[in-house]
Each structure stands twice: as structure tokens, then as C-alpha cells.
Amino acid sequence: MSTVSSTPSVSQGTSIFSSRTTPVKNAADPGELGKDDFMKLMLAQLQHQDPLKPMDDQAFITQVAQFQTLDQMSAMNKAITALLATQQLAEASAMIGRAITGVSVGGDEVVGTVTAATVQGKTPLVYVGSTPVKLENVTSVAIDPNALGNVGVLA
Image 1 (cartoon, rainbow, N blue to C red):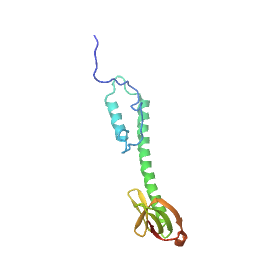
Image 2: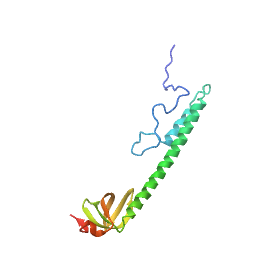
Image 3: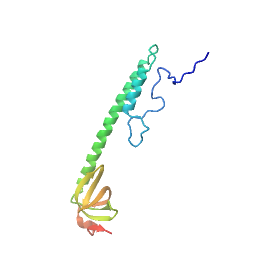
Image 4: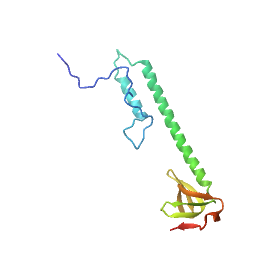
């Protein structure tokens, strides 16, 4: 007599991450595992293990260490992102009073003296008068405003 089980069998002592491990959940890719998913899988594995064949303690310790590493990497990623934003604002503010050439947010070529610097969202901007220019679109910087020629928005 044979029996058919409708639930898949899981071999005991195997890692819940045998197919793939992703350290940080990326909002752009919902198919990746994050730390909440990691914790849910680990708890589900503990709840459904065979009491007569408990999970290997080394495998459990490895998974806990992976969870801690994941958490530390997530915190480090946040710190690096904040540091990058601060560095970009410092770079943009260092251009105040300097003459630049660049392309405005509207797509026009701009030549003039930077009057202000801001960060909108994650994008650092410098302003020539009231014209915003993304920091990445600045093509040249000079101390002397006369070094770049005509000042203003070029059409």
C-alpha cells in the first residue's frame, strides 16, 4: 500500500538558503529576500522540524550568523548612503561663488556663478541665479567668473 503526501518533504539539517541568499531587500526587485523574509523562513524551519531529528546545531548557528551579518550590512548600507548625501552636498556647496558651465535641469546650457546648493530627494543641485543644475551635469568650474566667458543661460 502506498501513500501520497500533498505536502512537500523537507530534508532535515539542510539550509533554508540552499538555492540563493540575498543580503538586503531591494524595493526595485520584490523577488529578493530581505531580513524579514529571512526571519520568517528561519522560524518556519524551527516550527516544522521533526522533533526526533532536530536541526543540526551548526546549521542553526550558521543561519543566525547570516542573519546578524545581513542586519549589519543593512545598517552599513544606510550609513554609506547618508555619508554619500552629505559628501555630495558638501561638494555642491563648495561651488558657491564659483563660475560653472553645465546643463540645467531644463536642458539648457548654463554659464554663471553658483549662488546656492541644495539636495532634492537624492539629487544634489547647484543654482546659477534661479536656474537649477544637477551636480552631475556640471562640466567645468572656475574660481574667476570671467574665466568662463558670458554669464547666463545659453539657448
